Image (cartoon, rainbow, N blue to C red; front, top):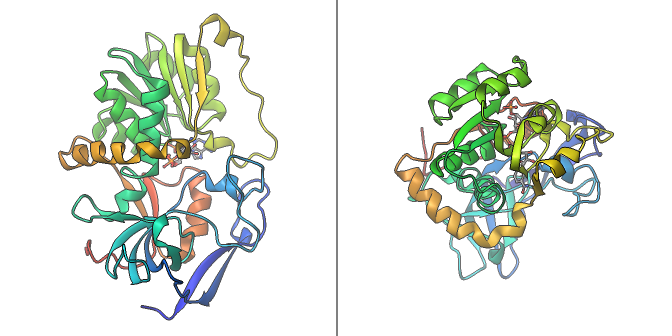
Length: 340
Ligand SMILES: NC(=O)c1ccc[n+]([C@@H]2O[C@H](COP(=O)([O-])OP(=O)(O)OC[C@H]3O[C@@H](n4cnc5c(N)ncnc54)[C@H](OP(=O)(O)O)[C@@H]3O)[C@@H](O)[C@H]2O)c1
């Protein structure tokens, strides 16, 4: 174990696209766990689009990160020292320790992980918050029916890949939208979507017409921007638009105008947003279901690993431009359960 901690701090609030100068990397003393706390060594740090909102200072469903503070984020780690009777050194845990190598946190804020269930890093993606997001959004809002057409944007990403696979299991015909030929190839070949449209190169409207000859019954919105503009007029009567996120617009300084909503009346379209943290009570249910599918090979996933805490800012900047391919994870330290 190192005898110093290392942290990524928010140096200033970004305007538009974040740059490296918005972040500071600093050494700090190793934290000392108080009674009821455990000292955790980070192994994997999750980078997620929602963090763009957290560093912007805008009023939202959650408190922003203060300037000068450690950037928040979910981490899988190993307990080094415990002052909580529920944990001992060597346990693997999931918690919100932020962008740092070590953290002293209350034991009650942690979820214990069993590395025999699945690789530890999956607790940040397919078996973690993004997977739960896909599950609750589809189950409670999208409700895909057999034979319906479901369109998913950011289809190769952490949320999108699970959305499409669960919609297929419900009997729907699934069309992905992703950035670039490699991502599209993977979405079709590995995830088994009917087809995948490259939003960067294709004439999106014409490609959607070809891929969805009967229109679109469920649109899973991950990106907004020009993709949303192309999808919206192609929604069917009684379509559901699951508003999960609009990552293409997170760096905008001014909000973009939305689509005209009169067709939502004429077509009786349901447009509903949701935030996964309102549905944590379904996490155990989702994990049990998804872990079984993962083990049987019926649920596929892809991870994009970046080595070292110092590279987190650059990787996060890339996430907001579509440079990741799969769930973006920063490897903070050695994973004793997965030595390759
Ligand atoms: N509502 C909730 O509770 C909740 C929870 C988790 C996530 N989310 C949202 O779900 C969405 C996906 O998140 P994720 O964690 O699964 O991320 P992800 O899909 O693994 O990564 C983000 C992807 O977004 C696409 N993207 C980024 N910038 C873009 C741009 N300028 N134009 C078009 N596409 C762009 C890229 O995919 P392509 O290259 O394929 O376009 C990129 O790979 C995000 O909007 C996120 O905020 C919401």
